[in-house]
Length: 180
Image (cartoon, rainbow, N blue to C red; front, side, top):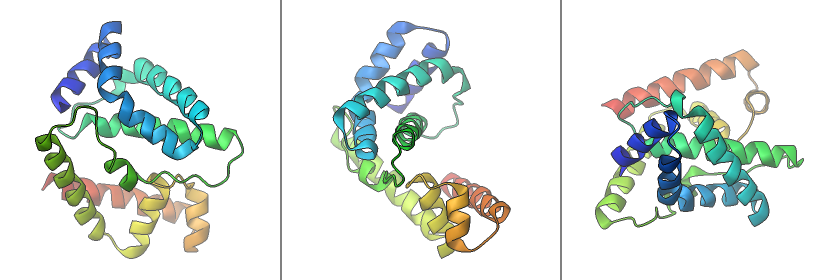
């Protein structure tokens, strides 16, 4: 399924409208779940979904095939679009845990796909456990809860540039761990 999604993204980058339609059929249930989880309101989630696929259409040429799941790229777009929509509506606190997203079944998921996804979730959790507690909290806050770097720096009692460094280095550690 990952290879099929990657091929569709590449076709979308070449402005293949049919590929966008097929990608929507394969991924919309999962991405809508993410939007709904963040925004809590169906109408707002539907708007965020539409904007998500517009962004996918516009930015498919930026996708880089790297051996990791292309769903991660799509989920990130949906999550960030939803967080932006929530903030635009004046909602201060956004709760968008990817732990909950992992529990949402993909459309037509086979037992094999579910086992692979569960294995990937365990690998990510194991890599997160390798981070120091303060770094792990920062990564979760920034990438799963939608907190700004400034909010994280204030909560941790460190300068903003230190928080940026923590996050950059933590992501590099996670990448290295996942490539082992």
